[in-house]
Structure formats: structure tokens, C-alpha cells
Image 1 (cartoon, rainbow, N blue to C red):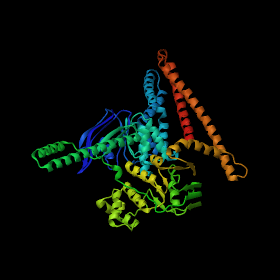
Image 2: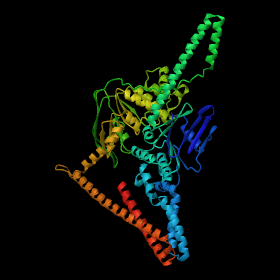
Image 3: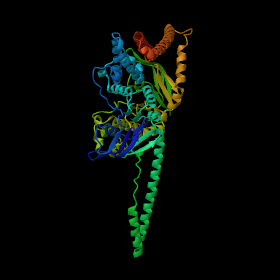
Image 4: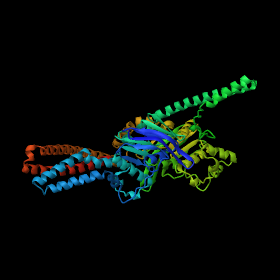
Length: 640
């Protein structure tokens, strides 16, 4: 066991957050900590990390266990570049490497007993360096930085110039490089695109240590965790399995609890009726019997009614009119910002009743395309056609459609002036805004609260084409599931951008992948996309490699020639990479032979032979360093 939490309780004033929370994490176990917003997940992590103290209970970490903690927001400062900052997690290996180089330099000036003594120290240190993958740490660091979504051009960017989300990614990179015994990650996917999330999934799935994750990304949790710790109503409950297993078991547990509560309520009502009837007879024996039953009823331990969190927020999306069958047609759409062309030649159609997910890496132009369709941005070339009776409802991830100076009450009243005060309050209450909350300024709300106000406005719009930009951002898991249910019951049409793969999987009937400045279509949900992605991308690549035929213009021919030249260059690079790998293997084998020779008793007494072996060891080590640098450069060229 690496972490044991027993009876953790925490209140802030009169506000009880956690009550008798107990769970444990075993070595190499991967667990999720889930719950609605405000359930106390981040508070519990801070208690585990001893950033704040619990009112009651104990947190026990395994002796000498190294813990790495990623909070939701990280502020890294200093003059380091991204590469330098992440490399700093390998400072001990960097120092060891430098010490080896210094010892190699010293050897050239020594002989006899001094040389033998230094060689012995060198061999011990070199052995430890190899055991800790010293020759691979730079490749490991650059691989992690790339995996988290940074390009090679970003490596030398100063950390001080990065956004908050980019700094969080850099800090996550440092944690992954340091390989602690226990990784505690609070919303690690918040600032990652889909490719980076998939990379992180693979990394954590193969991670040798233990992991505790707070995340609203259910697809991510399904791929990684084998245990779920749920915080609900200030208490904890532990379920084995991934998120989907938890959802099934949670529903079964709640159903059993509800049934037990209903049975008890029925029995209580029955006893109360019998007691009332006995008393109505107004005879001494019947009154005594009634009193006896009352005493038995008082001793019953009353079960609490299971909380029905699914009913807290209510979304009903109903279009006011039915659109024609042809809802949206996009033809040859192109958009650039200066010299940066986001996409060109984009064409697709959307029919009534479809729920279409637009996916792609960060920076490919997904949000731009939604804004173009919603006439918030101009396009360069192409045509956009809306069908008959199509009315758009737009959900903006930045919530720019909300007025920061208005109160919640004013925002809803202005959206639907036909509603009276009671109706406005009822709408806001269905999105968890009650009492004086309705008079809060929009500008004072959190991201999740603004998201709920935007959803309320969307519900009131009665639109029959919903255009949604990251609708699940800042929503907790239960709110996401409520939105999924509302969208699946929606009789209109939806086009949405989302990084939430579980949400896409549950709602999308078709996926448009914005990649390589064009659209690739998948007729299915996210699981279908994963199944067909590699096949379709190979087809797309093959099509792009076909030479220009008669009738193609000169620019197309030139593009084909460039592709062929690039392919030739890649074949050459692959050959050089293979050659470098063979040379590394040969030199490593020779270095191993030299190290074995140093342990030979006959050679140990031959100072001349020892000197020869030492000199060759230095030469082979230097050659290996050059080969490693060459291999790393060739490998980097392949990844870029």
C-alpha cells in the first residue's frame, strides 16, 4: 500500500466538505477520484499533499515514497526554456553524466595506481548511469515534451512567455520525467488536445508507479483506472473497475438503496396506520398495543433517501419549428489569417436529426469554422447554405454571448422577455441557481457557472440547429451526462466541437475530422472513428502520393514532385538511422568487452594494458556520444 486515507473530515466554517473519507491506493494501482463540482476533490488532494490540514483523520504515505502532484493551475517562472525546465527533473543524471565526462578527462593525465583507482570509481558510476537509462534520458525528455503537444520549435521558448495552460503542460512534463512512486493529477487533460490526451493515456497505462487522478474525462478514466473513489454528499464510496464499471455498479447500488428506502417507508406507513386504528378503538388493551408498536417504530433506524443528483439540473432542448431535411451545406470553404492557412476546399452537408462532432488537434480551425457558419467571422472563399426554416442556437466556449455586467436574472429576462419573474427564477433554479444567486453578476461567475447560464439561454432559444463549441468544458460528470441525455433526445440538428471523447461517443452520429487542412468523414461515433482512423488516413496519404495526371496544373505537379523528394529524403534518413543504430550496437558491444577486460585479474596487474584499455574506452565512449547525438537528431527529424 502506498497511500492510506482514514476518516478524513474537513469543514470550512459551517460548510462541511468531507466526512469520514476512507480509501487506499496500492503500489502500481491506478485510481480515479470523482464527484460533482464542489464535492471536495481538490480539497482532499491538498490534504493528502499536506497543503492544508484535515479537521480529523489521518493520511499515511509509504515510507520513502516519492509523490508528484499536479494542481489544476501551475505558475512556473524563471529564465529556463521549455526543454531546460523539463530537463531539470533529470538534474541528478545530468550531474552524473558531467562527472563521468570529468573523470574521462582526468584519466588522460593519470597512470599507475591513481589511474586504477579512478577507473574503478568510473566503472561503478558508469554502471549506475547505465542502470538508470542515462544514455536515453534526453530522448525520453524530448519524447514527453512532444507527447504533451509541443513542437520542436517550442523547445527553446522561454517558460515566462507561455500561457497558463502551457505552463501546466510543462509542469506535467516535469512530473512524468521524474517518475515518482505516486502521481497525483488534478484534471491533467484540461489543456491537452485529443492527440496529447491519447499519448498521456498510453503513458499512464504503462506507468510503473501508482496514479490517483481527478478528471471529468470519462473516456480517459475508462482507459487507465482500475478503481474509482466517489465523493458524494460529503462521503466516499469505493468501486472496483474503470469508469464504465463504476457507472453500472453505482446505478445498481442506488437502485438497491432506493428499493430498501421505499420498503422501509411502506412499512412505516403501515405501522402508523395500524397504530392509528388501534388508538381509534379507545380501549385499554388496544391503546397499550398501539404504544408498544410506537416504541418499536421509534427504535427503527431510519434510512436516508438516496440523493438523486441526476434531477438537480434540468435541460430540455426543444426546437420551436421543424427545419427542412437539408440543414447545412458547406462548399469549398477556405480560411486564412495572414500567411497561416487554416483550411481550404472544405465541403460537407448536414441533414436534419444528425448530431455531428467536429474534431481535430488544437489550432486546426474548428472554432473558427463554427464562427464562420454562425456569421461571426468572414471566410475567404466558398459557400455556406442554410436550409429551409433553420434557426441557429450558438454555445460559445468563451461565453462571449453573455453580458458581463448583467445579473443572471437580467440575462435570462432579456433572452426571454415573455417570462414572468417566477418563471425566470424557475429556469435559473433548474440550472442550480437559487435564492440570491440569481442576482450575481455574470462577470463574477466561474467558468462552470457561465456554462450553465449559456445552456439555459440555449434551452430558451428553441433553435433547430445547435452549434456548440466545447459544451462540456467546466461541467462536472453528472452535468455532462444530463447534457448528453438532452442532446440525444433533441429532435433538431447539432454540430459541435468537443475534446470530450466520451461525450462524442455517447452523442455523435457522424464525425468530421479536421486534419491536414481538410475534412475526413466517419459515419459513426468515437469508437468507430478509432477503428477506422488509421485505415482512412493511409488511404488519404496514398491518394496524396499519386502523381499528377494529364490536365493537372503546374502547381499540382510541383506539389507532387516535392512529395516525392520528401519521400526520397525520408528513405535516406531511414537508412542513415539504421546505420547509426548498427554503429551504436557495435560500439556498445565493444565498450562492454573493454569493461569486462578491466575485471580480468591478469590485466589488472598489467599497467600498460590497463592504459591501452582506458584510452580505447575513452575513444569508444566519445564515439558513442557522437553516435547518440546523430541518432537523436535523425530520430527527431522523423518525428517533426
